[in-house]
Image (cartoon, rainbow, N blue to C red; front, side, top):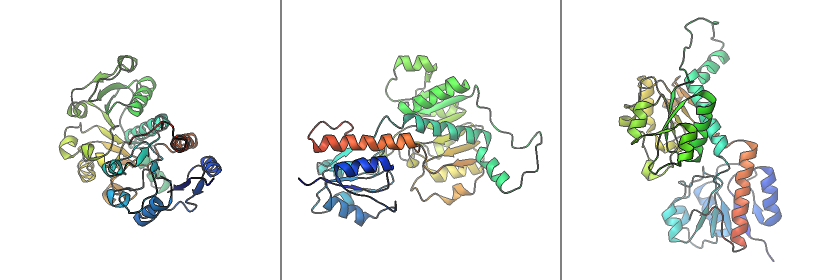
Length: 323
């Protein structure tokens, strides 16, 4: 019996690729290069399953390709706003994701960016590497205190709660948050967290604001100029969610004018093409979408895709089906 044909759009951890090869007729992206829309269309026409990542764009124009063989997109990542969900539903195309396993690693990166922005870590690193440091002095590169400061979370799901736990129990930070639906009381009690009635209230009150909301049309440019103007001039904005949640031009303007103290970003609008205005600023710390980039986490994400594919091809309930 012929094995199902599976296509990986990018290079995955070697152990996961080996398991896939043992179960399926797999085509790997050996060179790990970004693929084109035409290549995605070809994969949809010639494979039973296609496994994209969050950096691959699958709009309706790609999904509506004629003579499609593929029945399932085994997405390597939690977010799936890079896939046109309406087009997928219209064609009964199954989409799965990889929730749960990247919570701690992404929360760690959010805390890393908070620390980098607060203590001007990226700026200091650049100064030393450029051999421009003139030595210690009492007023050089003074920065923001973290211990006892207020962390405001927009969204209060798994990753936000993990960050809150690290911030509250590790740094004594006060936790406030906005979540459209009620959070579990045990979580609130453990973090001594306070719910806010609106995003605006979080922005006005927090010393550090961290974004943990999904991407997509509903949250595109949620943090715009009007919202940024509500933040304290001493505040910092952290984003490990999705790049399009922030209006990048508005953020650049705000950082330039010192409307806020700093920002830490792991995700960007139109990534990997980053607005050049960000690159010219000293008061923003930039990481290349490292949220889930640990060996254990990326391997666990691949294992999730394996489980989803195995369930699909066996005709069983798919653990992480989103469409």
